Length: 631
Picture: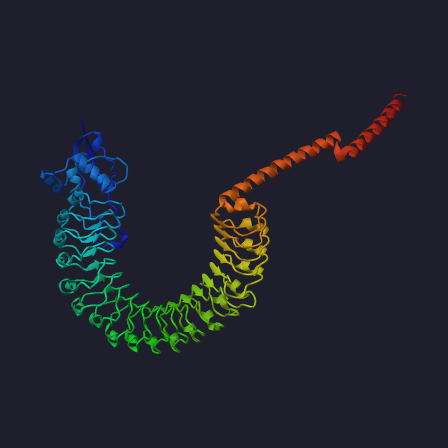
């Protein structure tokens, strides 16, 4: 008996490479196939590709019927199940030789713990993007030469020690990632044959020298990643790569800025972070197309003024160096959107820094800065300001005019107050003022109606002794940190913060929790450790979303310390059991009291006697009344 059926294979989609992985239209055919268990592979059909038995077969499929295949049908159907990993839904079958001829531009076998590449994979000769990353592959088979249409190949995170020569025959290949493989030696002779290669990543590949040959041969190179190697110098031949747009040399052993790079007119991203560079050359002004410059974690003690000639620069990261100041004309980089000067030795900011009107992110953490720019309000696009770990004593009032500000970090400074008009920051969602010297709680903080994250821990600052009831106005608050203070109680108004997911009150002097704590229905994390608490709320189990509870170092009585040490599950179980005991105890007590009253036992004996006397007198009077009535 034969059955006529239809099939269309489905393949994964990949959002990061949309241009190279647009799914080609699948061919659908019909064919009689014996119904055997081996051939009923679990394959899902795409509705838009199904065809009926009486529909004509496409010409390109008919022409392929004469092709001889080395694999039998059952094996190839199993291939589709294991290699393409289609869902376990059987809607039909088709001859395997038609299936492997269907165009599949994208195949993802990444992170599947495979150690050998299946030879059957190479029958899919139309594949353009192939993912084999993060597996245990140690050998690349020569069959790769059959993938003539392959353009993008990911092999990073494997155990590959060398490439087969046939890889050099993939003339359509434009992107290759060999990062994080224990290559015994750099396969220069093979890679140099890939003359149309545009994207090459060799992160953590054990390189001790820059591969010079690729500079001379791979003239179409646009993105070159050589981070996390041991490269100590860049050859002059790098100027041959005039189409290079992105160069990543992070975490190498460079001691000088390669001046040859300054002749690469097309470069837009240059990453030299994590080296030992002591100075940027004046020639850097020639990089007129540069948009992102990363030179953090080097040995820079100064920035040359020539860097301010980079008018296209949008991102400048120089954190973790030895800078004591910034160029006074840094405001000339008018297109700058992000500036990161964290972890340096800067005490004074340039007087015209406020002229960076395109700036959106300003990070200046862990310096010695005493004052923010006086005209900071002109940075109208600023959305993130991180000035933590400095010596700020006050904030300029006009900081309240930064209407786009969403994140403001001022922790570990010397602030004594917060501007009274800070509530004008209508878009602020995060405020951190931990570790400051406030004389009292900055009440103006409670006017920030859009605030979602508030950090008030004072591990390095002057602790708060009281939280005002006005905190209830922060109705959008999701995370509240009040750790390392001197709080004896929490305000009852905290029950109004119904959106709260995290509450941290560790390291205080709390002896009791508000009765209405159970109103915090969305609470997921509650940290109560290192306080003077003895009782947890009886209705703690009403917080249905609670998943993390820290209760260590408290003199617990209910629940007992042993239960608290066992964790949240044990605590909730104890509360449930305790409630049942109290419920049945109340019922028993009510029953016993009723029994004693009815029987006149114990303290209710006198009450029973008085009731009996009353009933006796009433009975005699009623009897006399009846006799008089009869007379």
